Each structure stands twice: as structure tokens, then as C-alpha cells.
Length: 462
Ligand SMILES: Cc1ncc(COP(=O)(O)O)c(C=O)c1O
Image (cartoon, rainbow, N blue to C red; front, side, top):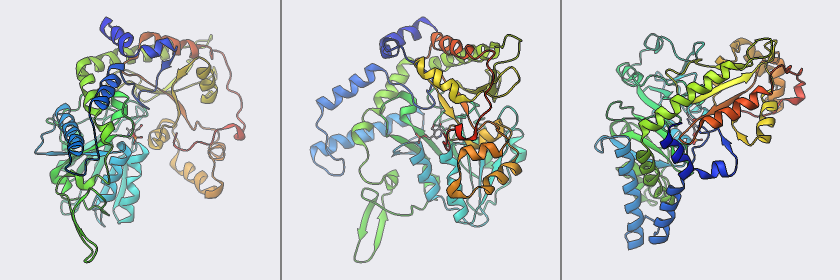
């Protein structure tokens, strides 16, 4: 850890060391710096802020803050104001749902997505299906990457709207999927939805260089605070093709009850239902300022160096007979990936050790990481090498009202149903990694207990 990053941790994230926490869930949620919160508290105590939907002075003050936040977001991502709208949502999932419910899927059009995707991107397939579009997943290789992308992506009918969706960075494996896909998919007739939620906390996204039609983010993942605010960055040209399925307060210029007519706002506000979270939105520029002060390139390098150390440390953990203690899913090396690493511990015979046992010891050691399949079932299916036919048989053999993950796992001959995910971020340190490795080392020479089906937690998605 460089001196400056060490100083940053001491200055802005002192609460980590004061409370002895090892925080390793940055893909779940980022951490805010103390100065961000002080700056937000100063703003709230200085200004008088009203509901932004009118023209009184306190309303105008809120409108000013919301518009300033849109501007700051565009500047941060180098998004041309003539090209991109910034629409405030609750989170990345809210932004994804806006696209899904408004996209003009129809018979003959396609929804193509990578198997590696968060459930909030998977869920768009239900809108696509309901409107008669074809849904197709691109498979993953052993490294949980898509091989031969251009050969796999089917040509879309240029006369019909088709959508291709993928994550800039996987929330399961940390894989960074190529940003070049944006133009390649557009050349094949697709609108492109880039889910950047797991990418932007540690990597610079430059929308003057790559121009997806839709970009989805959650700000708490970037800089910890505020929660409850995300954004959809949308090209105006693509926005014109969307059809909102309803209207709400704040989204319209005119509504008639008498004639049952309505006219949407011409700007992105047509997608912001009701009153936006104007007090929290005022904290977004402060978070972006914070990241800019530290420097995205520095954060990126810091996380890359630590990820290399983490991977080396995990690969170095062995049982006394020399067998590996850790099975990493996805890329084994630090290139072409971010700081998210999914793995399971395995016993000397190669049997997976139940991740809940590891989690129990981690809780005792005040270490926070994520377990389960992280709302990314497609990546999990490829990581755990499920045979689709067998998984389908097991899924359909259970009545929906009786389905539990325990029964599914036992039907799948006790294949893993989850993993451990460690993710690094702005305030991570070598000490965090050492404390994790020390914990994992305590499992050397342990044998995986035969699992009773009743023992497996019933969590769906994770
Ligand atoms: C890649 C990716 N997409 C979407 C989401 C959903 O974000 P949110 O829960 O903030 O809506 C996440 C959350 O982990 C994510 O990692």
C-alpha cells in the first residue's frame, strides 16, 4: 500500500482500524470518506431545501442541486451533454428496470445477454419474452469470459429493435468484459446496455470514447454514500425509441383526466417518477469530487496491486500434503479483471468445504465478505460446471411451492451452490489481505463434512 493510500485510509476511513474491521465487500457496497459526510452535513445545515417541483426559492435551490449533480455526473464520465441524459433512479436495478419495461421488444427482435450478468439484467428477459422477443445467452469459458464474441453474437434484424446487455465488470468473478463490444454490437444492429455498477468504483468509464446507449450505476458502490441513488445514463437517440408504460407526477408536461391524454416531459425527467431524492442527490457531486481528488487512476492501480497479492496469497495456501486449499473461479491471474475474487475452500481430497463454515469464522474475526452466488446465477452455473440438462431436471422435479436450495443441491449430487466473494476497494490494505489469508489458513488439513441436505441455507440469488 503506497504511503498516500495509507494516509488516505488513516484520514478518511479511520473507523475501519478503530473498530478492527476487515472490510472485503466493496462490490456489495463502497465505503464513504469522512470528509464526504462532513461536506454533505455542511450543505444540509447551510441551505434551505424544498421540494424541487415548484418555483419558490427553496424549490429552486433543490432544483439547482439536482441539475448541478446531473452536470457533475456528465463531467465525471465525460458524457457529452448534447448526447446523454442523466436520469436519477433508486439504484442500478431501478435503472435497469426502466430500460426493460420501456424497451420496444417485439416478435422478431432479440434480447441477447452474457451468462455473466446480475439478476437485475437477467430480469429484463421477462419483459422481452412477454413481448415475443427471442432471448439468448452468450456462454462463458473456463475463465468465465466470453470467447469469440463476434462469432457468437447473432446478427440482429436492422428493422427491429434488439438489445444486447453485459456488465463492464463481473460482480461474480471480477472479469472485465471488453468495452469494444459496445461498437461491435451496435454494428450488428443492437442497442447496447452496459451495466457499469461493478466497474465504475475502481475504473474510469469514459463516455467520450465508448458510447453505450444505456449505462447503469449505483452511487453507493462508487463512494459509499448516499445509498438510494443510482443513475441511468442514456443516449437521447435511444431514449426516443423507448415507450414508458405509465406516467407519474414529475414525468409529464400535460395530463387531462377529461380526455385521458398525457404528454411526457421532453427530457430524461420523463423517466423520474415522483419526487427525486433531492437531499441525497446533493451528496453525489461531493462523492465524485472525493474520487477525483484521490484519482481514479490511483485507485485503479492500488486495487490492481492488491488483487495480484490476494490471488498469489490464495494460490499459495496449501494443505500439509501440498494440495491446494483454494479453488478460485474465473481468471487465475490479475490481468483483464478487477478486484473481485470468487472462490471456495477445498479439502485435501478436493471436496468443497461449506462456505458457511468459513463465514462463521470470518464473522468471529470481524471480517466482512460475501457468500452465496451474488445474484449472478449464470456465472455461478458456469463456475460450478452445472450440466444444464441435469440442473433443469432437478429444478423441474421440485414443485415450485416446495423448492428449496437444499433440495436442489442434493439433487445435483452436492455440487456447490455458492462461494465466497472477496472484493477490494479504495480503502483496502495489505493487512486486510493478510488477515483474510490467516483466517483461511486455519482450514488447512480440514475435511469437508458430509453435508446433510437440511444444513444448506435456503438463499436464492445471494
Ligand atoms: C454488476 C451489478 N449490476 C447490478 C447490480 C445491482 O445494484 P443495486 O443492488 O444497487 O441495484 C449490482 C449489485 O451488486 C452489480 O454488481
